[in-house]
Image 1 (cartoon, one colour):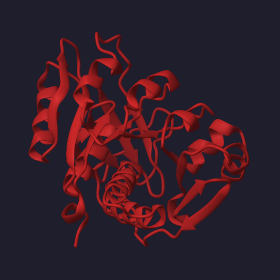
Image 2: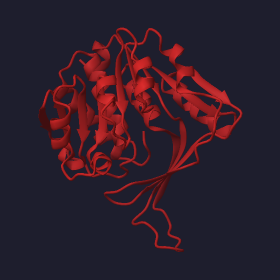
Image 3: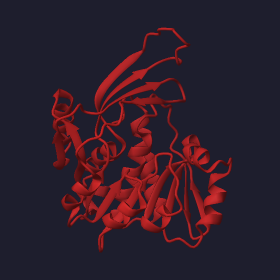
Length: 279
């Protein structure tokens, strides 16, 4: 039985919705140098948006919350989301340029450049009414006050940290997703897992820390458990963490234990990074 066969919950994903241009390169260019990419892929992107797509592919009833511009790129990414079975009723169309991300993928690395953040007439709070009745809210909006408003009565709440850290997040969210390298930079330590264990042993939140070829670590109640990665030769690491998040969320909604959920997350991450593009 697949995840979708056992799922009865619904998930809202809140965050940026991008148009991505992914370039597979042999190496990064030197200053003032032009190099030719080996391959190119275009399509929808954005961390929470990628997670929404992977959740829909697992059979979850999924709604995307955020905004796009009233241009051709915005129309394209909305059509792509709808084609994947994602409900876009909570996406607002603004008179602005849609966000764009350029993703460079040399071997065993990724570099991403995004368009400037604009002062859009939209806030995450505008999206919360569309999350009413959802069983799970997954967001990339890292603000403790907003997380408290978004938690709801029975709804579970997860946050993709995306390189950020605040001890208050562990008190506001039920689940926290992060990459070990980004977390190490945010905490200023070479041993971020050890530090999280010490700081958050009394917090109820469960941490999921991905670590590339080494797999992922679950941290809760002052203890850590590591699950081995799925062997794969990566083509493009962009979106691997977003697919991991989707696998974990879908599995937890199906009643799985965290270790089992992480295994599914690692399987989806392996699929995502074995091809060019975030999805």
